[in-house]
Image 1 (tube, one colour):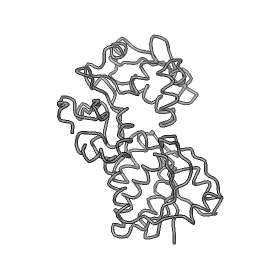
Image 2: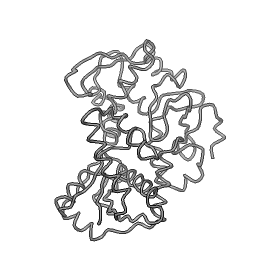
Image 3: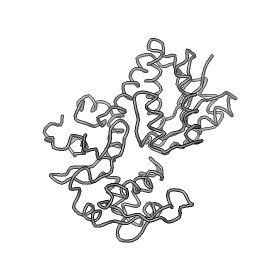
Image 4: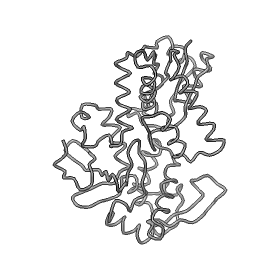
Length: 338
C-alpha cells in the first residue's frame, strides 16, 4: 500500500482530480511561528500559536494526525511538494519524523510540482493542474536514506533553540545556501544591534514606521502610503500573510501594560482581526521608534521556529557583517563571529 501526503492545498486538489487518489494533507505556513523537532510538541505549539480552539483545533489536529499516521506506518509514502519554502520546510520535518519510526528504511518517494517564485517565498499558492499530477507520479523518485537524513538534519537546525544564523555552527552554515536564505528570513523577526544601539526587528520597525498619533487598523498599516507600508504589503505579506501583523500589533499593545509601546482601541469587533482594533504609538512607542530599545524586554516575545525573539533569557540579536546578517547573544563581542 502507498500513502500520499502533501502540505500544499493546490497540489492536494490536483492529485485528487488528476489521479482520484486520497491525499492526506496539512495546511500551515511554517514561515512564521514556532516549530519543534518532536512532532507532538510541534502540533501543540502550532495550535497554540494560531490560538485554535474548539472545532478549529480539532480539525487541525485531525489533519495533522492523519499525516503523522502515515509517517508512523510501514507503508511507502509519496510526498507531494513544491519549490515554495513553506512546503520545503514541511518536507524536511516529515523526513525527520519518518526517520524516527523508520530509521533504516524510510521508504519515501518525492514529487515536486508547480512553478514557485524565484526566491521560493510565497503564502503557498502555485499553479498546478491535474495533468501535472499524472505526469508527476510517473516521474516520482525515491529518496535515499542519506537524502532523508540530510533533510532531517536541516529540520533539526531550523527547529533548534538557536537561530539558524547564530554564531554557533556558523562556518558550516555558510556552505548551505538554503539555510542561509532561511536564516536571513528568520533574522527579520529579531531585534538588531548597530554599534551600541539596540533597535527593533526589521518587521517591527516597518510596523512602527507606519504608526504615529493617528488611529490605524492593521489594514491601514499594510496599505500605508510609505516605503515601509509598501515593503510590508509587497514583500512580507506574501510570505507570512496578513493575520501576523494584526497579531503582532496586539502583542505590542498588550506587552508591559501601562508602559506598552502601542495603545489600542476596539474598532469593528464583529469583523476579522485585521479590522477588530485600531492602534497608535504611546510616548514609550515614540521613544522606541526614534531612539531604539532601552532593553530587549521592551519588545513582546515572539517564537520564530525553535528560537524566540525578544527573549531576555536568550537575547539573540542581529548584527551585520561582511558576509551578511548573523545572530549572537546580546553582550557578546562581534569578534566572536566566525
